[in-house]
Length: 199
Image (tube, rainbow, N blue to C red):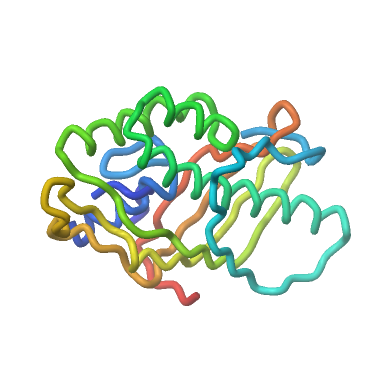
């Protein structure tokens, strides 16, 4: 089974929640560009880029360059999701996500975050990306990663207690699609594959 992802969800539901934040907005329980290889999107200075671990690959310099750009955008998107959640502001969340996420997906992710905030829940922790492969074909790229979301989850803002079923997992099998548009790689969607992976 494949589900859309980012930090928003219960055992199965929760990795969708966690996935939602990690990914993009086609969601719900979860989440879900296009840009030329000629430059990374602007990254707000205050974002802490998450840890990204990759397996060594070989290829031409051009492919490596695209690969590095795509991984950088994915890491920036993950950090932007965290900062957007901390902002507790729909307007700030939109601004933080704009450099990394396809415009058509931003409203859905912000809506999901707003629903979580309205329930009095907050995210904690950070996704550790373990990139397994990057495939760039023309204006599209697919990143397959086996993420560690075990340090993530949802807590009740009023008590700090963990929301039951919201804890992440050590090996979350994720595929992210990015498209090149207007000179920037942008995340289009993320899918959680319901099969085991190994980081």
